[in-house]
Figure (cartoon, rainbow, N blue to C red):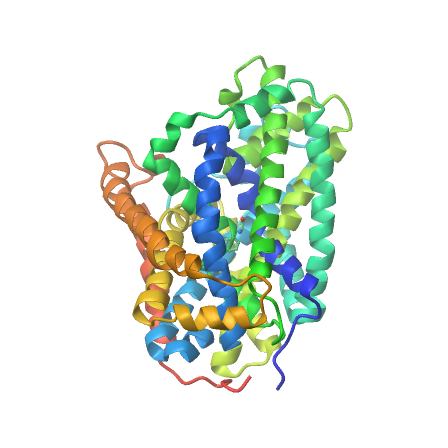
Length: 500
Ligand code: PHE
């Protein structure tokens, strides 16, 4: 059977950008930048992008293009079983991410409809936690299914799996050709509206004001690297899978630069839009921007509804556009992450795309119901915390060290990328991958293990958001170790589709 391929270069780039641009760009980047030096954060951010983000993206694009397989098959072709497990490990972490990422998209979808008449009322926080999420069980308990989440969740999976069933070109590529331009246009509308609101300049000042002293703080650099990894969807098997569908004669390096810069451009736009809106909010309620600035669930589902309530007109439309943008940004990322295991399962077990989507995607959809229960938010927080804090840096570190130092593939990959690319890779690429990235990531892992595990999770000093140690450690370890064990188990058998 012929291996699926992208129809056009733009199709591939849109899909890669669609994966990279996600919830992280909208609800995570603005606050990370603001908290870590504002305008001055752009220095560590650009450094992380240029020394780790784009070099690794180039490496993953090259691996996918050269070995033409899902992440585990590509690694298997690179160095046999000694490498295959890494691809599976990435896939199982992706599997976990997909289960809760889908749930957040489901919330955004529901909030799109709430926007029209601001169904959340004036106390948006109580509405979110008590009425919408119905969070009234202890951490670690599930409680009943919340149907108001379950139904949109089912829709999210039907759309995503439907697109995946349609294939690489007729499904993923086509969807992104529609999703990404729509997202950019809608998001531009939000940004323009936000920067023309009274008080927006307060937010923009807070966002861009450089605090150059922070540059000397190592945690700022760690934040920059961590963010770049998550934002570019690297070390999650995604970019390897997507680039394995590139036609033989494709450019690699330039595509990676375009993807990286497009993602950062969108992120910057989101920073401007979000902080302009926060400035408006702060001015309305006569508080400092600091008081309303936040990230994640709180930003999107508590503060934004408040901002929407306060708008001088067209509240419903603005709100719906905002939440619909979140939904689109999320869907294109969910599709990319689900494709990693669809591809892996189908190649390993010789399944058709259809069966792989229904089995792999179906399993993820079933598990995601856990996060649509009354205690779902707790599980979601723990999984997300571990993956963001440890997963990305750890897997990225292992990948770079294995490929560059243990398997010694730098020269070979460099030559491969240079065969078909506009921008030729020089020695800088190897230095970034072989030296700078491992040093920074190694330092990051060390810091995280010593500080987080032993201080932040200490019962005396208070746990992460008040969760018990057992819950966090069980949750976190289950995710990390479970994925690794499954990864090793999956590399045992033979490949059934070694010929595509
Ligand atoms: N890059 C996506 C974002 O910024 C997040 C993501 C990470 C998506 C990993 C899929 C996999 O939100």
